[in-house]
Image (cartoon, rainbow, N blue to C red; front, side):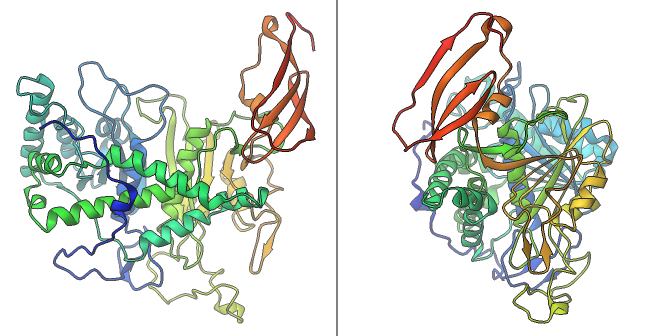
Length: 533
């Protein structure tokens, strides 16, 4: 039967059925990435297995300069998270030269011993044999199509690529059955309120808060809904096999026959949908508004390293937003990731970027629920408030980093909330060169926590989520050559948020007069050959 390309609507996935897997699904939250103890908690949070699985899916979508089309290699894109003793060692994705598993071998080598690996696809036999030989502890993968796709032309028995995929799946299953590492699908039931919680916190995060503050009459909820809808369609097409017969075929070929019987099959597919919906909402929390909002410096760029491309910045911020879903703070989840720009790409799909550390706000290592205060300023007695006990995302990212910060490299922190006065000096002294965040709370004092020192942080380039201006456009554009210089006498810059008339002086735009929103853009150019400004 030919592959079905029909899609279900978003409404088809709204139902959140229970997952009867032999155990009653309890509202249990496990402690931070530092501990494995299980404790009762108030709010829902992602389990470590689900968090790392979602990070692997998101890493598969890392924006690359060139598509991964390998010569004589049928493998598709894949993402990978490497975890060792409660800390994330690496976030990787496949490249033109290497599969994600091969990237892990090149980047980590003997350090892979005892690691847990989370893949967005079942890795091929070439990767599996090296990872097994490296002594990894566990390999978990998303139960969609394999890295070497099993769905393309599967009814064409003469198709050589499909035959290669079958041979590889057979070899991978044999490696699995004869290896020490536990190779499995590791998805855990979600808390019954998790989907709603992530949707609400994503829509109410500081990035949408900044848009709402700039545009009080704008319906930001509508922007979030549209963004989430677009994400849902894209992610379902990428990570979900809509046709049940095809999905059963893939599961059988990957040695997952137990998932093909009911109720296991329906439960698995529902759980996959739910995790995709989590990713959909989190990714929508930083909307793609290419000509409207982005991460820019308030002042001219000046000296220092250039900013990363906006799509890469957004990807890293959403990594931090996913980490925030593991928060132990009952009210505010914050995530932070630290990346550095090395001298060589080392064949990773992330280019020259490599992970330094990541974290989220949590209580100290080994603590149990209710050992420390949980309440905020609503608790009248200050000694019974949470602020003096909870560790911030920036602090955990620096504490549990997997690589040292090098003075000669551009090290960047991506954090989902403006750093407070407790974290600002740590960021400055740690050697962070750039920080990407929102300044919604900057220069504010909010009860027991203040944000007065962020603006005064020197030696760190601060790229803030804000509305794009003509200056930002000119800074991002390549400077014109002498023979191509031109002067723009006037331009009406129109966005869904505002319309502004700009007059260009030399190579910079200056706002001249805000005008009523119109439905078209008018630009007047006077081109001058070899002009001198």
